[in-house]
Length: 130
Length: 201
Ligand SMILES: Nc1nc2c(ncn2[C@@H]2O[C@H](COP(=O)(O)OP(=O)(O)OP(=O)(O)O)[C@@H](O)[C@H]2O)c(=O)[nH]1
Ligand SMILES: [Mg+2]
Image (cartoon, rainbow over all chains, first blue to last red; front, side, top):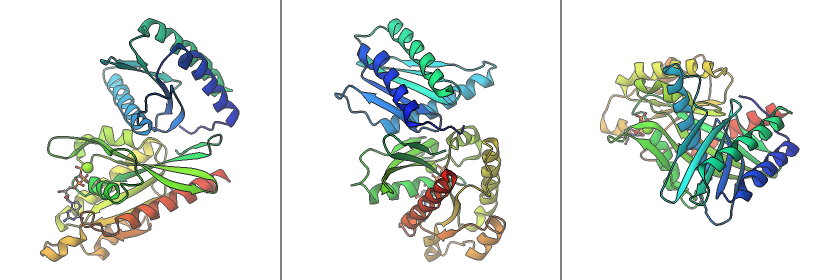
């Protein structure tokens, strides 16, 4: 899982996350690699989550779910979703080595969020492959 | 692997404490956490069973300060040492930059230490990494038990059994008392940073 991201690529990824996700009103977006490192992180300035611990747990959790998928003969589960009282959290795989985590409130419908996440993943994958 | 954010001038480094069950990996992190409470802004994350054994991993983010203008953030992890948790051990090793192998000095744990070290070699190979190339050091833990007349493996025996081929730095330590815990951490951090800097050249 060796990769290298230049400053321009990072800027582009951050722009996509800002325009597609932050501007629709989500609380926090974290883009991580499967080792648990944070590649990019944006938030609305109001909620302060411990993003480093979140990243470590998300990478571990996703890794565990992927390993389970393989055991039962599924390719992979490409997304996970947890609904909470106040905030929900949505994980989706980007290529093989990255994970996009979005934390959002009740105001946003899951359908719209999924649509936007799919769009931004397509754009991010282009940047990663460039 | 470490992630270097050239834009934010930040480096994230992953260090994993590996070793047999009950060897003292979690205790190392707990000591580090209590010693550096003022520098660690978050809680230590521990996913464990009721009996306090590590089930998935422990996680402790640690700010190392600036090196050559870069903010170095070290992420410390432990693996679950119990044999049956190999799948999760393998996961935690993903993207590892440096390893502390915590060996148990108690005499009857000689075989467990060896098994765990072999298991580390196998799991690293799955991630296409060599135990001979990754920054690694050995910690011979629980040296304090000598005072309670518990039979311990001598340092020579430990060196011979674990370190004869690896030839990496090793420390005698006591994670409960805190002896050499911070020295172990400092040494692996500097070994890892040097290795990352060399890769960048
Ligand atoms: N006397 C003594 N006891 C220790 C030392 N380090 C750890 N212990 C004890 O050994 C037991 C196991 O320690 P842990 O830190 O939980 O071991 P671990 O390696 O994390 O074990 P797993 O999570 O099962 O892999 C605990 O009761 C500790 O208090 C030490 O240096 N000296
Ligand atoms: Mg433990």
